[in-house]
Amino acid sequence: MASRFMARAFTKCSLADAVARLRPRMKVFVPPACGEPRALVGEICRQAPTLSDLTLLGGIHLGDYPWARVEHAPLRFATWHMSRHLDDARRRGRVEFVPIRYVDLTREFVAGGAWAPDCVLVHCAPPDAGGYLSLGVSVGVTLPAARRAPLVLAQVNPAMPRTLGNAFLHRSQIDAWVEVDEPLTPYPPPVVGEVERAIGRRVAALVPDGATVQVGVGAIPQAVLDALVDHRDLALHSLLVDSSVTLVERGVVTNALKRIHRGRMDIAEAMGTRRLFDFVHDNPLVNMESSALVHDPETVARLDRFVAINSALEVDLSGQVTAESLGPRQVAGIGGQFDFVLGASRSRGGAAVIALPSTGGEGRVSRIVERLAPGAAVTSPRFLADWVVTEHGAAALKGKGERGRAEALIAVAHPLFRGELERALTTS
Image (cartoon, rainbow, N blue to C red; front, top):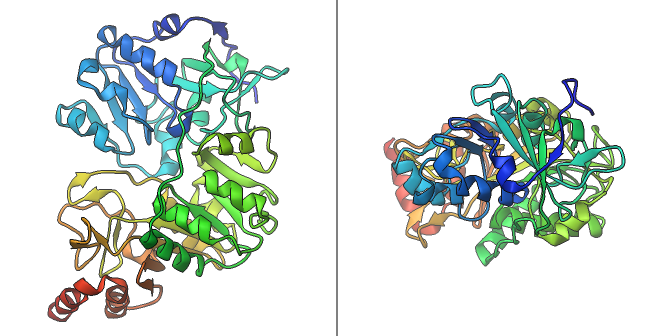
């Protein structure tokens, strides 16, 4: 695991001294979600006046994105996942959205890529006796970026769980580190309503025993996991949340039938609370891995009965899916959806499931639409969605012609909008 390059100094220093190594116009990678090293990021914000045009690189972040505040105007941000917290900074020209598949992040946000960082921040558990530091809950893109970065700054935190697998940097791969003992940024379980529970039950009915399941974050994935409690011999892939722990503890998730890494879960990110962090600590069932493997459609295709469960903002009557934009307005990102639905399409017994409420805007608009809104980005093309599930049913699309697909989708739209969609179908 040690670097093939010259050993780094692994110098312990203060936050101020660590960030003083940065220079204006650098690109600095920030680990996402619960792995964000908040102390280092906070110090970058404090030193922003001396770091003109420094660009932070990142994705999903929890909290309010402090670097996007007006008072930190010298800082810029390039992201593969938009947030409402970034809207004002984007209007001011300080935020650039990068439309990119998750698997490609491990090529473009590392040395040699279009967004090669000059520095990578990492958030680690303390080193073991051999000098290895686990990246804990955020490995997917952070690990490949750090292993090839010109400068690596570490926040070493006793609160970070020591996860196993392909999750380690050696001290010789780190230039400087700061010791910070603080809780990780949590991702509390979302509130699940009756609509989400109905969707969760319908999705769970499509998951066979022995399947490998991939879900994202949010209320619908939470409801799906809650509805899988009576299944057997499932495996989990890519992401762990608090509800994942329940499925392992109840014997639902065994990973016993996987063809790759049997008995273990291949995970890029863990997003949850202390319950999840304690679960993944030194747990041999959890194999943390680079997104170069976890999000690779070829890897996914080798997993039999791979069920990719992802959400959407709109689905049109042809089966096109947007999970990232409202018309031309970017509100999220591509994430791993395309990688997983593509892999599921090639998995023996696999399926790509798109799950969404039938309406938005407090029931005022249908999310099953004749056509995606003008300017909307297509996250998943029409030929890759096998099922579209709402609280009103599950539309089977695979193998159907245009009319059959449209009729199936109208049947799972909210009743208030079915007539309008049927008229659109007959006049198109």
